[in-house]
Length: 70
Length: 162
Image 1 (cartoon, each protein chain N blue to C red):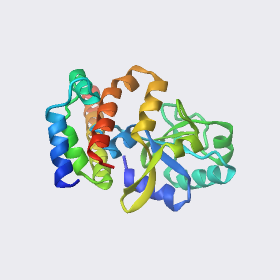
Image 2 (image 1 turned 30 degrees about the vertical axis):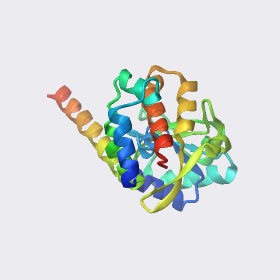
Image 3 (image 1 turned 45 degrees about the horizontal axis):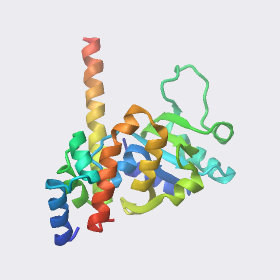
Image 4 (image 1 turned 180 degrees about the vertical axis):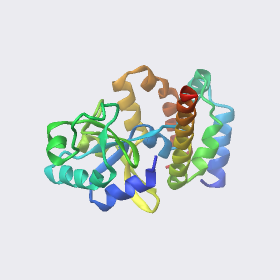
């Protein structure tokens, strides 16, 4: 992402134009500021984040199993 | 989930696939998290053979099925079915022969982008394709992610981000 693109992303997510899809997403409850970090990352870095996120699901699942066994 | 490893295994085996679903969303820039990996695969005999061979070492079984249910993810099984939800040593993997709202592998391929994941150029369903498939699937969990996907798509278009 270039500096100009980063600035444009920042402008759009902090102040989405009325009636835009971004404005609708914000109204729906989407945290648009998350796009700043996700779009900064390369697809490989995003893949790593997805794997890390999946590990959280796994830990939560194990914790639930443990609680049920206890 | 072993995302990069799974993609590398399929890639090395010469399997024709497109990454779809939650992982495609994440690779396109969504903040969505998922615990399984969804693929659309080509239904040619050669590709089916390659897919079966590639996954064999990772002990694929039908997810949620009783452990004593006889199941082999071989070429014959894949050819007789279409969509498979599997548990494997690589994690939960879904293989779809068709995607709602898009169609078969060639249609999905036409709606995909090339993304470099772990040094490999692989096909990932585009944001437009994801939006079409989510609209067509129409389940609450699909509709729930539409505002984010539409917003992200608009953001990337307006800023010229790939």
